[in-house]
Image (cartoon, rainbow, N blue to C red):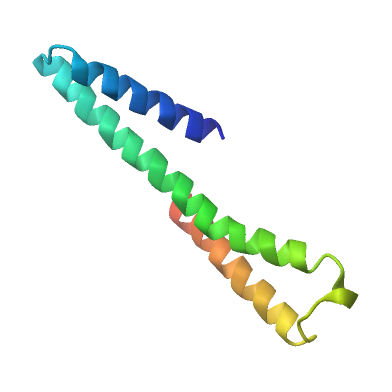
Length: 94
């Protein structure tokens, strides 16, 4: 959420800078702000796309007796969701 709010603030600042006179230093600042905005938005999308499947699987498997999956399918689906979630960790870690 903090990253999303920061991205929105950066986007607003870019819009404000675009309306004013562009000096060389301001152009460089605008270029860096756009790069940061791109990185932040990419990070948000990556996090959501890798974590949501894991959370959905966990929510659906809260009551194992009422699950629509067979006992063999449940660990396989959980393993796949955990693998997708680990992609976020692997890409995000330095």
